[in-house]
Length: 163
Image 1: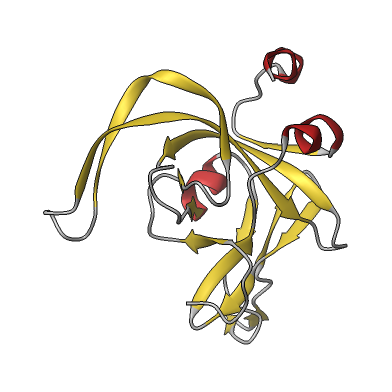
Image 2: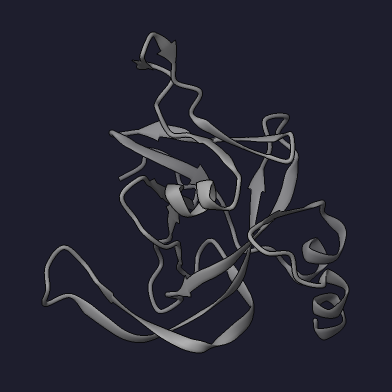
């Protein structure tokens, strides 16, 4: 899938909800509900997956690591891969341009990044996929790296007390 050994999240304009696998994110909390996921093949159904708030280490356009906090993510840590829902991010006010920089749309070159609170986070384009380099943060990184929120803010101090 990729020519590098980095772990990445697939940036998916067709996904209705983000799903985080074990290689790219950790879960900080879970809600009281669960979710069933149906893939394009109705036989590929995953039932009773938890929903919660995830933390992911990503890099901004300057190459600095930051922690991306996302609410309402499907906990799919039983698998390696993760999906970032472009429209879910947009619903939370994130400026997402998932058009690769080698293409243009309406005469404007694709930016291939997302902007959260004036912080640009670049995507990669590899083998026709838009990817976000990511990894699950360590507990020390959760305490020390800058945090960017996508979704409803929760009390970060309470989460830090739990880890």
